[in-house]
Length: 506
Ligand code: AMP
Image 1: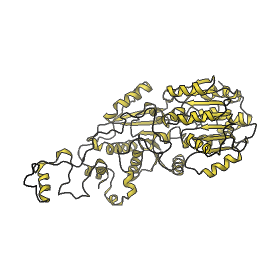
Image 2: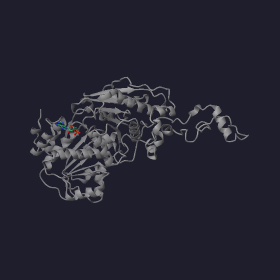
Image 3: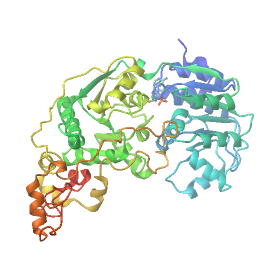
Image 4: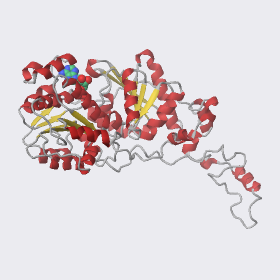
């Protein structure tokens, strides 16, 4: 078996690796480090959790240990799709480079340009950046990329999902032709293949087993149920989530809860808090310092439940996550693999639950064919009953304990709106998925149920008309029930007008 000491790494890097407690290189490290140290391009097909960050950081530090950066001319670039990943790479860099005198700068959105400019001006050896922010600096004339000797692209497939490929191509074209490229992707979509064919020169190709096949330590479970009513499915899923957590008892020390859409991340986190669970949301619409604080809180145990979107949580290295709970079945099969890979890390036991309703069947099929086996079905810890299926009754049963209803502020209202916003949101990291754009997706929850729906008894409409002075003599509609109108017996404030209101009305 290869040892770190066999890898011709700088002795100071070796010392830091030893102190990090690593005994043997992981397969991606054993495969990628030797060609990277020889100056060859590397194409690493590996997912997060395989040790890939060290597989490019260790040779990078070794290669840069000699020499100095000039002002505004970084000697290397590491491009990451999200701010969190970039921050994580920067942390890794600090760990492995602690005995080597190298400078780094982290260029991510949500942080002032001024601070970043000051660092760049001093000269940096390693520039770790998200593509958008890097190009912003370049366009402001603050950055010269002519001296880049090594360029790393991390999580290229996620870059593709997020629409960053044109930025990556541009950055490639701004760096010298002679640079070395270390390129990592979990999958090789045709577009990724095209990029590697264009910008990598005779790369050493290292492919490591997909995480799904490697993580025997993750116990998976599928909890399927049929909502009693379509407009109650979100509420019942939230209750199912709580029931799963409660049925896991002490074993559930902490959990990452994944939702497909940011709007649901907010709703689920808020609902959990209302039910006394220590939960916080993380997604791309929250500002950077808030996201960092939340992640730190989850890492240090002061937050127990992290409710997350895929992009925000992708690739994050948070050890000791006992549970992953898929509030939604992911609509892209590979996201399932990434999600459950947040638990069961480094040989620890982990549990991954997925809540599914009948509409999820096709996504489950895609997941099961990707991972090559069915997700083991388990009995649901709770069965929704048709009783209490009116919005008001369920409101009492679920999200709005009586004493709290009146405390809702305006901000609450906004974050409580379910099922309305499109999946494509505005935050830089959560850009539209251009490769897979369009399609029906999980957002289509069918027609909304409005008020009393089409089942309004005719006499209610009659009384409604009477209240307004009765129908005109020539009206032909006087006895026709008018669905979706308010009735006299309900005040404007009481009657839900849309599904959203049905969720939020007291
Ligand atoms: P990554 O895939 O880079 O996110 O790494 C996943 C986790 O594996 C991180 O917590 C690393 O600190 C850890 N790790 C990386 N290399 C090794 C190694 N050779 N031995 C043990 N743990 C490692």
